[in-house]
Length: 302
Image (cartoon, rainbow, N blue to C red):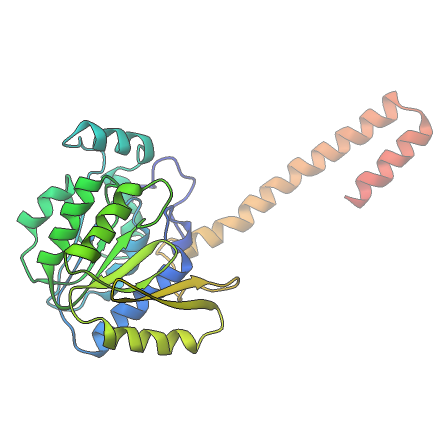
């Protein structure tokens, strides 16, 4: 397998994969997906906007027999309009389908179904009421996010969860408008908010909220606040210092990378010794004896 372009080595751990996937959201992904397994909720998984694959890699561990995992991204392709093309060029110029696939295959044996193109192709490729978990992290432009939310609603089946990224980031007002518009006028019900994502459903959020609150209140590494707004119970979560991401298996390259490390340190040692000898010789040739002794003593301790 080829290495990821522009990197020294393939990812050894999930944390080595570039991307914005905070520890709290990793915890919440695992909790919601584990809960679906425990309650027997079946269906496909869908991620729209994958970047380098960090969240997709974690999602890919939760597919079960008979379920599909689909990802969609523009990758290096052309956008449908100038605004989206400008956004893609500015923020995601390093993203290619090859980079995503190599990162993903470092942790999994097979790829998900990969759709290359704008998120507008999703409704024609994903069957209605087929998904139990949808993660939307694609364009930040209002019109696109509005349509992505509509596509998520169509794709979700009973018991399904939608996760909307960047719903309150300073640089993504279009996402904020589209998300809260969906809450106020399109039936979206918030389950909880993290610093970066809104987790929601088009069903009664009460039962899953109650279970989530019980889980969070049993932890010491998560801030919790509850507010009421426009008839919705808003559960806000924020990680405390020291929160750890849920365990994740190392990549297929972890052992190879660890074996290479001793050789690298061994190779560096002769270079350091040769540099030390040259410094001592130079000190003896050009400096007064008192300074030469001081330099030699310092080098011998380094």
